[in-house]
Amino acid sequence: MFRLVQMEDMQLNTLNDRTNAEAAPKGRQREQWSRKAEFILATAGGIIGLGNIWRFPYLCYKNGGGVFFIPYLLFFCTFGVPLFFLETSLGQYTRQGGIRCWRAICPLFEGVGYGSQLVLFYLAFYYVIILAWAFRYLFASFSSELPWASCLNSWNTGTENRFLPILIHCPHLTFLFVHFANKDTCSEYRPNHTLQEFENGTSSVVEYWERRILGLSSGIEHVGNVRWELALCLLLAWLLCVLCIWNGVKTTGKVVYFTATFPYVMLLVLLVRGLTLPGAKEGIKFYLYPDVSRLSDPMVWLDASSQILFSHGITLGILTTLSSYNKSTNNCYRDCIYLCLLNGSTSLVAGFAVFSVLGFMAKEHGVDISMVAESGPGLAFIAYPRAVALMPFPQLWAICFFSMIISLGIDSAFVNVEALITNIVDTYPSIFENKRRRKLLLLAIGVANFLGGLLMVTEGGLYVFQLFDYYSCNGMTLLFFAILESVCIGWIYGADRLYDNVKDMIGYRPWPLMKYCWKYLAPVICTCTLVFALVRYTPLKFNNTYEYPWWGSAIGGFLSLSTPVTVLLRMLYAVSVTPGNLRQRLKILCTPAKELLPASRNALNQEEDFQTFLHAG
Image (tube, rainbow, N blue to C red; front, side, top):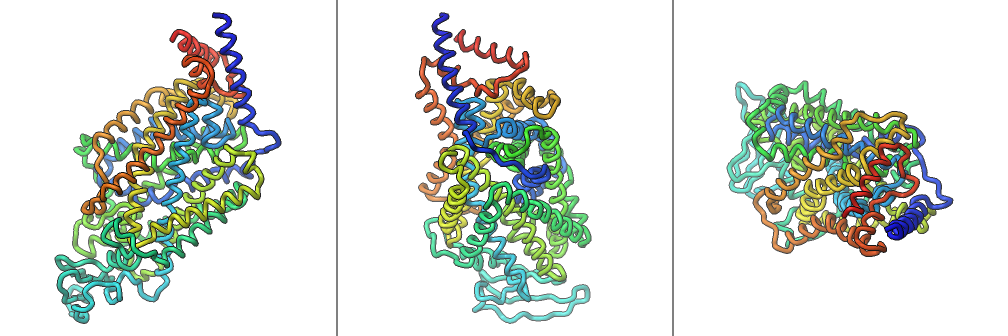
């Protein structure tokens, strides 16, 4: 028995020596943020993005208005903030990115890092397409007349059957524009005018989006030609992303002073403008009016949990990477609280800005707000442009809105790419530690993503975009990673041990609720939500009408399963190459690197209990 224990200790020391050598390459000094504000702004820019503007407000009204805050706040406290703090403290303590930090903490779970980086790669690949759309709309906003406000364009339908507009004077209206049209005829949106939409007709805003911008085909089977105007906008977006992180955190830390603050200036401008519009009060009522009966619907709770994961950037390795550039004494606990509160507050304020404008548009058209409320790209490229066309000085408000969308998106995009680059450099330091090679890697990723992204700016590109958006970075994948992270830290590495690590960094132990969330609440809640999401899963449909062919669904299934399978394969590989029997292998793979071993007696006791459990097995 003594000889067996001696052999295990020798194997454990060998693995620790190898892990230590890999975790801290000689002669390589990790960069740091010049100021604490750079970390705060970079993290805020990375997690606060388009989802705060176009997803949270829609989910709020869809799921019972103010009642939605109950499950949202519950999940915010039980696994949103705790997992945010877990990843941030882990990166700062290990001073490694989203892959190597797991190798140092628990080699068995190194696959979590690889899987999360694959998700991040998918996200970086298709996220920039949104910026291309936004740039195209921004450039169009500088025209003398907004092109989506009129039906007198070459791309509009029914031009061959449309009479010229007739001007009619009415006692209570300034003007009434009527277009005599037949089936599939465009209808215009005009400020201070009523809207006459005929059955089977389409709006000028929708036609501009589908026919002018996208040239939308009938399905993913018909990819069609590249929309070269969008391709040039995509090139511009990738150029900006590459330039913003060209010199690593030194460049990123300076750029975020603008990219992370400018969206708030634009959001404030649009909020003030929205609140002063007629109908804004009704829009805000619709946004917040509580419907208590909705709490009995499980989908409300599923939407709340997925929004927490999406909006906080959890499980993607972004938080770990950004915090790895912090000074070891930085108060990451306080930073996490402030950043999470800022994120939630931004979502709430964005809801006021969006629904005040939607209330105005509903009043102008004399319809219910539910008829004009949209989510996702439908809000940014259909609903809001439609509302802007009804305002005085529409070009000004269109420029403000799309400038905000671009600054929000570009911030998240280059932070995603920076995290991806950092993790590749950390994993292969002997190859990419040279700054010149790092820049070549950045260029290669930018060029490859641009060339691959051309597929999404074709006439069938929107169908491909939705495949990636629905399958590659969905809530089920993020929930799976959240479960693994909480189990690894809460039960294998040890919640008390990480608390002692945090105390070494900031000088005190955080509120005990965090570690109980890691051990109990987060894994239980995420597991229940994941099971429910699997039960309620439905295949993707475009606009709830178009069904993807079998091979399209197969591609989606591959995107969805590729990340969890990566984690499991990496675990099996680690077990297979580690010497000893199964019990010895698990002991070795669940032991952290030497420099991470705790000094406190409580954490040592927890380690001894875990090793006793392994020996008893």
